[in-house]
Image (cartoon, rainbow, N blue to C red; front, side, top):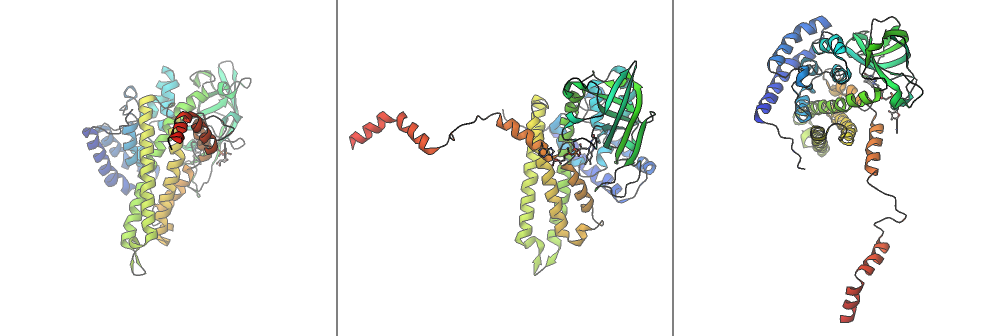
Length: 429
Ligand SMILES: Cc1cc2nc3c(=O)[nH]c(=O)nc-3n(C[C@H](O)[C@H](O)[C@H](O)COP(=O)(O)OP(=O)(O)OC[C@H]3O[C@@H](n4cnc5c(N)ncnc54)[C@H](O)[C@@H]3O)c2cc1C
């Protein structure tokens, strides 16, 4: 089947509108230190404009108020939005709310949608996804320890989580917990909605990170450590059926991962533009940096890595559109580690060419670099995605005692195959 990433001219016009809008209206916001209320005051009119353009929450299906764009269009759109950390929230598709909305949309009852989903989509509520635990390897969620035990009409939850992004600014948590320890975790793990103000939910801190070392508790974008101690929530807060946790997580993480990769393309391009601009502007040892071969290599390698990441991302998106996200599992895993590394490399080179200025907070590069480092960890560490890719690829191969390309063996087989003709050729001599 031919690959086709093209979109119609009307959509190209929308992309052009987004480019101008993000550059002129959103980039300037990055430079001002804003509190939550002022940020909302400044961004509410921008959100209204996005809605007027029919581009709000475009990742969602039309029945949820989105555009049902499909992944290729979203890829092209996220590439633009990803260039600024503020743009996704102004377009109604910031993580983790976007992924949580999709998840609740898949598994929720009508009542749950009324209580949680619609307010989430309208931006009236905020959510967080609470799966990773400090005591167990997040890479292997079959090891999760957090327990939810049914007691009549309620769940009683006990556990310890961390790196719940936006936990301290969320209204509710989507919790992953063991509900049946007697079966394999794939069948015994469930997702439950826990309002943050439920007694027993103890958000002990926002973890200081490389991205935010001087963390201010409760700020949007923080990563919270949470104890759940005898937390009681109604049984009907279960999303989907008991034991659906892994199934739902898979549905949420596939699209969520590729949306990250799409946004990284925008971040890489912004760093690349800074790299090229500085190469042409800085003069040392008799020429501009652009004339040094090392710098030319940086530009050429960055361009190639970005192009590869872009095509791999669009291909994965196209496959998701054609065959669904499960069919594109390998492609999504591949772009997750390839894209994260490409992003990191381009930003690193952009810092290097700016020297001390690149390392300073006078440029956005140092912050981009710190955030890019996390890309190799969240939504699955690089190594885990490599395992997925290698395992799937190896399914197409079988072991051979002798390598199938072993030339002496092949020669023997060829001699047998062509014996008659070879004998005749010898006789004709
Ligand atoms: C910025 C950020 C935001 C996050 N947001 C959330 C969130 O909102 N909700 C949430 O629940 N979690 C969140 N996480 C947690 C994230 O999902 C986990 O960090 C990730 O799954 C890895 O788990 P871990 O940290 O426990 O590392 P571990 O599982 O302990 O792994 C540590 C290292 O071991 C190596 N490793 C693991 N498995 C293999 C393997 N099979 N082969 C080779 N090497 C391997 C890898 O190098 C890996 O980095 C976030 C993390 C970050 C950094």
